Length: 203
Image (cartoon, rainbow, N blue to C red; front, side):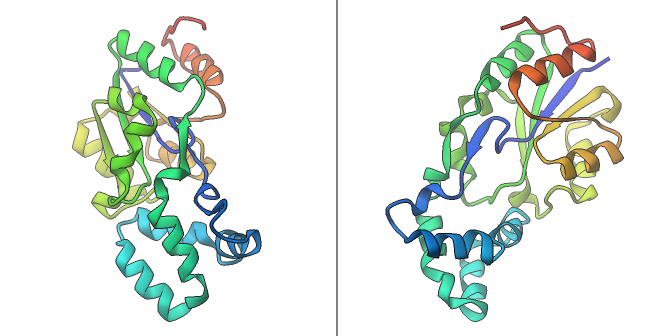
């Protein structure tokens, strides 16, 4: 019997596009060098795990100073990475809430920019609470963050559906005992929940 659903936020409830801040501000080649050639995703994961942007900039200045202009653009215009709600997700959250299902969030997100999340995707405001990786210094798929999630909110993992668009995070949640679902679309999530006995209305 499912009594709780835990949502990832990025590209589940709110769309995130790291390229957007650079449009019209940096040449495409410089943007690509920062986001792909430099392995921005690994760099950004450290922000999710609690590193401050000031420390990130200092470390980049020492290791790859040619990317400082790109980092500054990204941080200054981070709000532009949030391109709005994921289609259909607000309705899923609203319908779950109407059924009395407990709703929580677990997100990999810098503590310094998390305040921008809810304005970009109002579904986040329907959640009871969100565990933000950058605030606790642990990021998915670290198993410790799932242990903290369980302890903080008094969850029964076997009765909790965890929804994420990252296969690695879904696998980690499943290893922690959660009923983990890989998010693709809101409609597919409705079907996944229906298969678990959570009867949401069809759209």
